[in-house]
Length: 283
Image: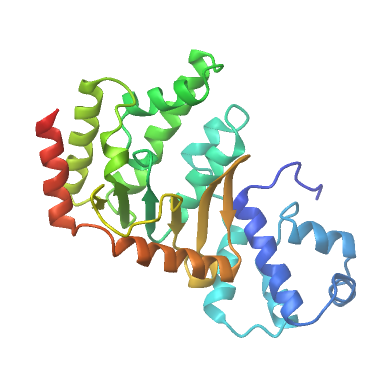
């Protein structure tokens, strides 16, 4: 089978986890290739996400690596054999890969936790809000490309609007709620939309008030996506060149600590809902 020209973030993650298991076993790619009657190049392609792996191969690799964590092995098999072609595939080749990778990882997540300081989170944005953000940050984009990005962002909400929504908790700084990215009416509609999602039980939102003392987390924005097992959790942070996915265990531990630290600075869910409601009435 010819190598893929481009691997998705999820395919790369599968390869990364197989490489970690190999390295933990103290084996080199050449030694594994000999065991499987393969080549070092083929093992490398699998570990880079550029080649697929069958259930049989994943289980054989796990056995060679003396991995006894059955839940992790089953989760890796599910990743390797998943043939889902989700709604995001209609945007392949027309939007940057990170847009699709984010949607796919959200689709497979078992829970979502997010911290946002300067903007309303993408999963809670109205179309008007999203359009204003895209046109301001990328003024060179033609209207047709802006429309595609807005449509894709609206479709991402399927994870919280389905019959079996993914549990989603968002921490939003008051600063993000008060910025008028468009006009006053758009801001009012945006706040009302967040309240509707809270009242429908689709999301949990906690607000950090501007007046909160001792909050030094201005750079804390991130999303934490739960995997089928904790080892397959994923972090997502904005980077100078775009979205960066985090999967190294020390970094994931750091993100979990960060979420708990920032959460301690928030109002409770009921107080946050009241806070947003008062803001809506002020507009």
